[in-house]
Image 1 (cartoon, rainbow, N blue to C red):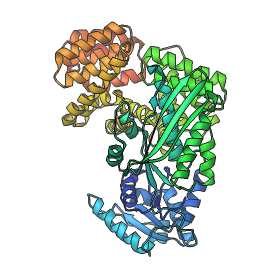
Image 2 (image 1 turned 90 degrees about the vertical axis):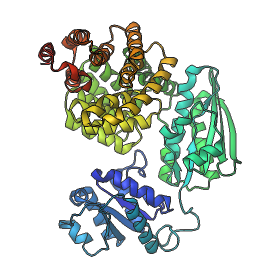
Image 3 (image 1 turned 90 degrees about the horizontal axis):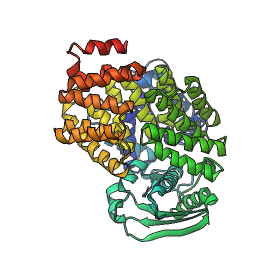
Image 4 (image 1 turned 180 degrees about the vertical axis):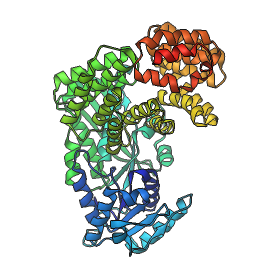
Length: 577
């Protein structure tokens, strides 16, 4: 892709690198950074080499981690061999050693050893502008007249479901997400992430207000009407500054044409915004997840059910994913979905599923698409079932590298970190998961329970309040699901709403009294209410059938703090083993 700066960093400096990236791109300096700018399914090392070749200035976020990272060292060596200008941006007071000393010893260093980092980024911007000249553009010899000075910014609002059936929301949401994904593959575009765009779902908004709030030039909105074997998709691209229509179209097609419609919308936007579409980007966008539209429909429905997280919904989601695989045996995402459902059914509900089967299903997803983030997340979850945490963490990290906006990767990894008593890391991951799905109450509920364990009692009330708001919406939409009721009850108690907490507990128990997670979470709230005997009764009832993760959660869960000094807790410890 055309860019001015290649930004190199170690994994430990990811947050700092992203802050530097944001500061540079805000000033119109075009940057290339992995993994954001690596097209899905492409060869990682090859893309790195080509990006270093294409840059004009190589910036390395330098720290102890970068100094010892073989990946960063190879990138620096490549930049030196290509005679690129190099700027080390030092964020830790460490000298370069070994190959790094050889490569960077004679370069001009910028130190960013104090915080906040913004003033140092401003200095970096000035340095780069001087090095790049008055206008940032492609390397010498490139056609600077055909590329914009910065990436064109766009937000894709959730497409309205016009089918007259709220159960069809999964389909319009799925199309929106796929269009966001496709547009995100275009290096000349900056696309607002799904989690931010979906905060506008169901709201009457003015496009110009959205443009201002999200700081984007263009907004895409549309609608989907699905009826039998036919689908109608409308789309309109609006200039957020003027409110004027840039492009609009309507597609009345057979349902089997839905991937072609998505492709046409993406190409129409790219053409209207005069953004160059590189060959590998064109190829990546053209790759449909499956050739079978019926399989795709079953997959979308399965994903919708999965996120409700109860036994009956896991089973229902699994049937949807299994049907998708039956229709298309090469559908990697559907295999990942089956593995996820089986993992949670095994983990929480002791369903008789062989762990080897779950591992094999997740391996099949990876075999079909090694570059699929969802497959790596599923593999990590499966490995965590057998406490192979080092391997699981590597899979989760790979998933997040491939797709930094994947909810499942962050949520699954957070749960695994909690089981290992890595509370700080679990909190970071749950916080990110809560950002990625603005309708998810579960990650926020976990944070409400984790914060007291890491000395963040002051953050409990705000996160509990947000969790209750989201759980209440879920209860309204799906009153048959006990999960928002029992998780919400714990949050209500943290807010001092005792009577309401008891009411939600009763509701959860009435919905599904035999649900293991319902019993566990009701025990959490009863312990905090001082109903210790009832809490012990529930724990002693569920522990003989509990697996290692549930036992680990009981040991580390701050909700049970009031029980640990009581004599009856010894029986709990015996059952934990």
